[in-house]
Image (spheres, helix red, strand yellow):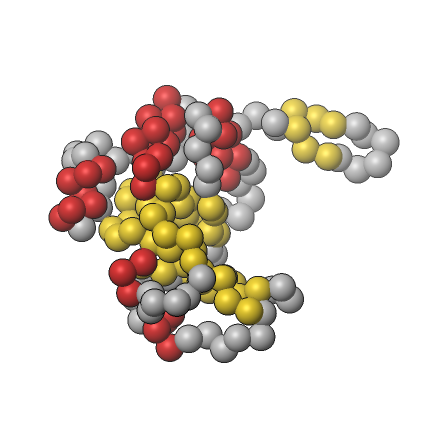
Length: 159
C-alpha cells in the first residue's frame, strides 16, 4: 500500500502488519438510502446496533433488515463483523489491513467507523469467503460456530 507524502517527497510504502480480532454482530442488516432532507425515522434508532449518516446527497441508515418497514429503499442481506477492542487514532492502515484481503478474494465491503472501532459489512453469501480471507491475512476470526448456525440462532462469533 502506498500513501501520498508532502509535495516533492514522492510516495512511500506503509507496512500493514495489524492482526486484529473480529466478532460477528448478530442479525442480518440492510443499508438504506433516504433523501438528503428526510427526517431520521423513529424506527431507525431503536435497535442495539445501527448507523446513521447524513450528507448533502443522502441519508444512509444501516439497520437490522427485519425491523425496516416495507417500501424503504435498501440493499439487504449484509452481515457485520466488528473489530474487537478500542483502536487508537494513531494506528495506520487498520481498514486497509481488513479490506485488502477481501478485495483480493472478490468480496465487496461496506465500512462503518466509530470513535472506538471499525465495522465491516459483507454480504451474507460472502461471509465464509470473507472470514477465510481475513484469517489467511492473520486476523482472528470467529471460529466457534458456523455462519449458518450463528445466523439461525442469533449467536455472535467469539474468537
